[in-house]
Length: 258
Image (tube, rainbow, N blue to C red; front, top):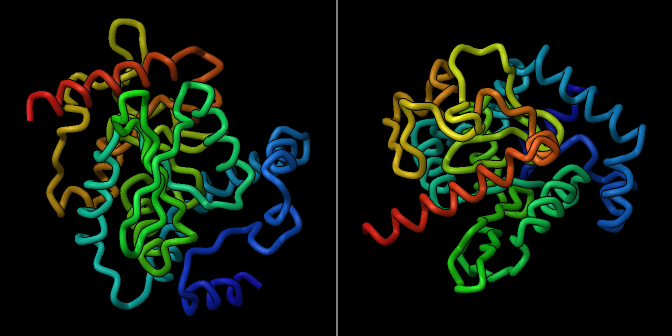
């Protein structure tokens, strides 16, 4: 069954996920939110988190293979780097995934709900702005981006070790998904002055990785908030508000400087 599903993914023209084609993927956003917060939804999320921990590298290899023989890891990672640094918050999502819907609904609670449509060939991207029209969030629905979405998902797997969606970036680094993030036992700390935000050796937004660095799983720490347990956990702890405020300030300062 796994082999058949992988074969369909390899031969298909867009990125696929576990629940695609199921009744829940066709349900309303309200029903998706209810499912994500239900005991069954929580159990599914825990299973996906366990699967990521145990089978993460194997799944990443399958996702990279599914991107097709023309997939170039260096080029894909360079493109991803530009995307994740294009706005204070960048979300990679499946349009019909319950946890992606939940992540977008949560971010909307922080004022990221004014959608400004970007018409760009070969993409399915929404730019969400503030009252001044400044882009605050870029949303990429990778299941609507054709083969480019498959390549971006493969690049995400390479640099963050994650294959599931959503994958949420703040200040150019991934906080993980809605209910799961990155192991707290990794070396280093993302806490400075008591708030989770940035390592002392990191330069948010302006950080530039070479192709070799971008392609190396050994550099995952440069692409992730290593003490993040996911978007929901950051919200519950109050850290998300701090991260968003600082991310917006950094982007505003960077744009003024340029």
